[in-house]
Length: 155
Image: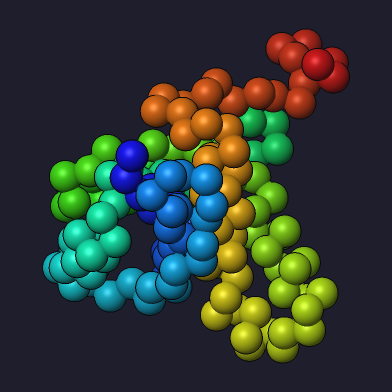
């Protein structure tokens, strides 16, 4: 088994975490400030080669209902670009509440607002990746579970 790269995609910053080779522990890796497609491509090619990445999991921002919106479409488009750039398989995984959890942890340990901003995306990526690893590293997306059924009743 090889390492998995977890990505918390953002329009300006991209948080990343990496698994151990046995795919059991996620470790925060970096927050990358996006530049332009050419520089970003060089960065991710180098990162995936150096860390011996075999698969990438990208957080899919879905609404609490389980529906995908504009942010999810951007994450999917960026993930398709990243798959093309790196030649690696990309899987999408539900990232609901990872940023909120990351923010709560950083507040709890006493980080200032400025420090939290710099670390939040990396910690969110770590939470996303750990959830993915704990789920057994599914190679295909699980169907999004809605909090309500088709008639609007709790499921």
